[in-house]
Amino acid sequence: MNTTIRVRAATEADIPAMAALMGETFQSGDVVGEFMFPDAEQRRVRQPRMFAAMMKHRYIPQAGADVAVRDDGRIVGVTLYSRSWVKQSLLRKLKENLALLAAMRSQVVAGLMVEAAVARGRPKWRHIYVMYFGVEKAWQGYGAAHALVGRLREHANAEAAAMYGNCQKRLLPFYADVFPEGVVTGTTTLGRRGPAFYFIYCEPADEGAEPAAVREAGRC
Image (cartoon, rainbow, N blue to C red; front, side):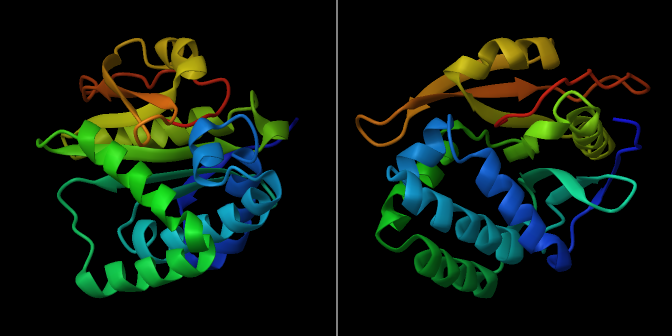
């Protein structure tokens, strides 16, 4: 595909396109999405609404959402992340919880289990935690993911912060290739018998270091 990919901060106007892309990206083959929404049809409807609620009330207000866009402005990739030193206000947290309850309904309990599992793997020191990372399937391998990861590294290095994330087992070889300096620090399960996912840690790169190449997208 002969086009230029650029990365910019997401805005509220981007939420419909972002939520649709992430819903489609994590519709199948993602153990966390399938844990939260076991029914595929329910997942197709409710997961994009869940993403929209988190984007509106958490990630975008905290400058924790980037998008990869084509020359024509179409969004083809999304990253959602949080900075450990930036705290969500009580009002925004309340609004997010109400929006998530409306989006997820009875499955909000599973969502809380995911949040609890992530909290177990987050360190106490300064870091950026990358929760969701997705690229439209047709654009995997065309530079969108590479550009998004490059921006994440810029954030982490500029703010002298380590970068953390999580991935499912089948993506471990991919992340070992993408982040050769990354270290798997542990694993956890969702609930008592839920699927496992792994925590990955990357130190800030040396000043002037080139970002690692990325060829496709997944959960980090």
